Image (cartoon, rainbow, N blue to C red):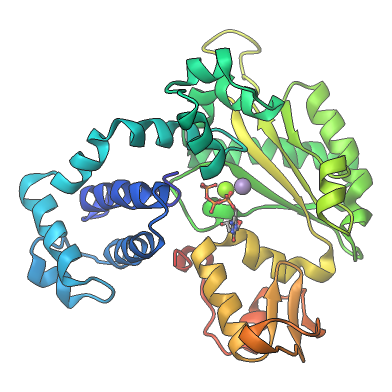
Length: 353
Ligand code: DCP
Ligand code: MG
Ligand code: MN
């Protein structure tokens, strides 16, 4: 989806970024990873420019923008459109694929299979396809779940969860991660990191999660569960206790019922023990490309970074395949992990790439 498409409208290059992002989304859909990365890098560069970039020459002088992308930027600024994007959108199956890929729990293979079976609309799928419960939920609430959440609503949803958690356990500490922590004007979902002093495993936060989900469900805040820890599927996939709850929520109405129907929002509750808090903050703040570059850096230095910590003494064999797990160097402190990797601290809003 349009993951980082949260550029401030005030940005002098907002329109150019919007069109390049649509082009990038198209390349993501057709699995052209090379072009996807090139567009993402160019968008990150443009987002940082304090002035409008209007000509190919200006664009080409900037980092990570090649000659062809520079020409496209000039085309966008001078014509307010991009012909290549219009060709892409004219491919009828591309639109179908784009729609199917928006459904929760649907990947490129599932979507391609439905297209091969002749399905072309969400209504086709709802009526004739074999759907999991989550896929059906994603289709039934498609409009809501593909609407971005304004920053102020993310904050309001968070406040509601935070108050409920405090009533259950005053020692619980909650924080909004994801695109919101990176300063996005709007988010695709709300990612809430939950921790507590003196915890060393997600299991230590299990009782709090159970009570919190029960309370938020009873009060009508949580309206659907997509995945919960300790489901059979999660137990098959991970050896350690589950640490994530995925579902949907709605903002309670101040007027207690009147007014427009509230929009369903995607919410993730992430259980993080204190011992892993710094590493989890890095991971759940993202973005995904920033995470990838941090992990690569760690591996180049003979270390390993994941959402639980930074490890050293990792032995790698042929093709950088890991032979030993290594020992934990740091998990708690976000800044220390940056320092140990030898990278300058970057504020969350500086982590768009
Ligand atoms: N993440 C990752 N790799 C993935 C998925 C997620 O590194 N394949 C990390 C980085 C993300 C964070 O988890 O920033 C939260 O994931 P989201 O899918 O919620 O993404 P964002 O919050 O960044 O964007 P959005 O506004 O679309 O939710
Ligand atoms: Mg998110
Ligand atoms: Mn999320």
